[in-house]
Length: 253
Image (cartoon, rainbow, N blue to C red; front, side, top):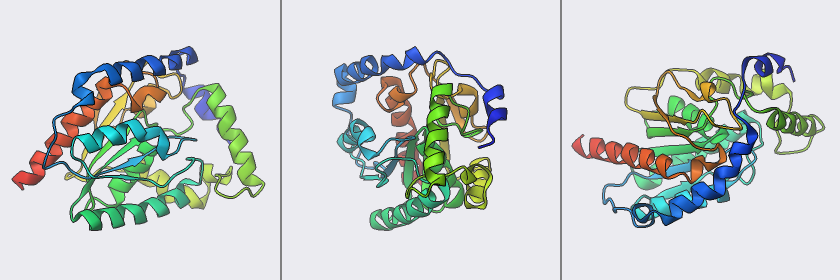
């Protein structure tokens, strides 16, 4: 995999900052506003997409919170987010189409890390189905702008894909035809009718925060670990504001 350019161009915060996850989760669970959020009868449906190497279970806390708020929630169906982006998005497009048809309205997408890049591409491709996209610590400018330890894991997984292990990306995904559309759509402008927000943290120990700044989205900085993006109270407040604004706009329309 030809990724040396990415290694030289990007850098992350110290990895020990990721140890904050348990504290961030504890703060969320102790927050009465998060435990018992105001229920919205006009709540938009939400599709959740997990991050690299993670599955839907990693977003279980967020799913429960969204449901308490009145949102209809669908999961991605991903057990471990390590497949080729082209194949993953083909499945996600089908899930998005089915969920939007089931709900009878456009839906909001929330993705963490790699899942946020998928959410962005889905929003670019299907603005008629997506009303909002929230990207949490998502490297939209360069998917390899990660810490050395994570990059080693990426290389290992790619070698497994090269050996023919099913459901795993390969080195060809970096520059190959399978992911050409994904790479192009990842940096394409978002439609005006899609509210997009990108959350980033300068103390992210996994992804370089600079690659999470989306030129076509509202960018919001918080002080958070990368893994904690799914459980940090400040992230939930951003989602709360974004989803409420979308619901009110759709009612007004």
